[in-house]
Image 1 (cartoon, rainbow, N blue to C red):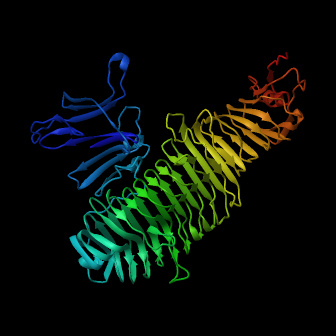
Image 2: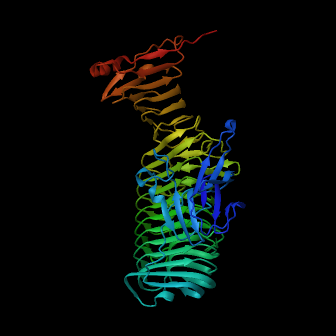
Image 3: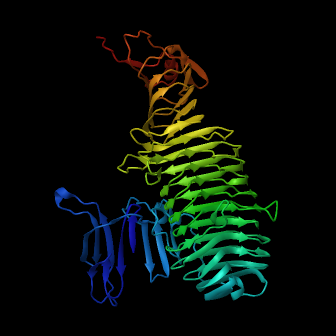
Length: 614
């Protein structure tokens, strides 16, 4: 049983002969007939009261482990219970409800879908939720073949069912040994679903494919690496074949597996499709392993078919492992009809992360989400080439992600490094709080851009950012939105002309020139340092309590207007430079009369601070 919070973890090993915490034996009597409950709790500790922090373990009423230390590193965020290495029960990202339960009823859970059983290895080595993992089927197959030895060009499905298959078929195959040139979960025409597990030493020197070589798979294909699988060549979702009418799923959950490179031009270790139509979705999930080149969810080439398409969406999830190259939601060619996505929760990526592709067309937008891991390059919601038709978005959530290479911060863009984006872009920085991480996002000082190749609006959203000074350099935005009780300071708006302050948020802007529209919500607070804009309209429609502070009197205070329900009001203030070094506007509701409150907008209350001249 592994327990962790994403940054620290500990492992309890329970069997008939003993109970151990890591390498320390806590209880060594015969457990075979023991019916006592095993209970665990993490205590933060209180040094003044002599209470040590750590994990506490009870067997029945007996305390067998006190203040057990935790290990710093890539612990899971939750609980993983593994039985004999054959299966995992996983509880991830659960919240406490009013009863104080760690795993309350589903009505009290934030992410109840993250409680599931998986027969494969979990991303216990990643620092966050194993995004994208599915519950791999273990039973109920129409045909099975276990512990296969692979050689030559190995068609795994044919080892279990050599027929053409029928609708409703479900084939499960496991490879445990051998060395092949190519390994296909399926090759040729077949009707039914195919699930291939490479669990031990079964290797391919050239490539693996969920569907390949020839023919059409009328069904879904899944290929995964788990346990002690060694890996080998490149992995394709589909390669050199007619089409796949369903979905393609690739999972990498073997800690020591290593995957090679396909060609030197646009060198890749994992690709969604090579010259093959896939009518459903492509999902690539990396929980562990080493990849010598980039990972792409889309199409490598359409050389054999000029109109190669993926009919659904492509999604790449990096939860762990090491990628020596870029992570790309899209591909190099063809069209992806359902959009493209890249999610990073852990692992190390030596290159950049792209939501879209390096060529081809994304027809329904692209998205990137980063909650952990290390990215040594940049993060782009778009691509480095091709086109994105629709909107793009990139979200960085929490303090755990690192975007840095040596001494240099990486950049974040709502667009791409090339190509075009026809829609709008949104960059969301979410749930960032001050901490001690040297390179966490509470200290982030890179560049955040709306995207120079985005033709629509470009919006920065600060969502519950409670950092004293958000040090990032902003560029190419049209809007900045401050939401969910954000409380921080910015040095610029990155060109944005409109700022929206939602209820309860607070912001300090250090030097503002281009601002033209300010929208204030209830109890919002904004301080403008050195306002030099020609005209600012403050929209307070529906707002009765707010604070707007100016540290210096603008050159022309008549150019500050207050808008309420479509009516503009002048701000009434003195222009005596010796009387004011700062001013605060505060709309106060008139007690007992809504009509008086609206009428009073023409005479907004303000306070002066005297400036002493020497």
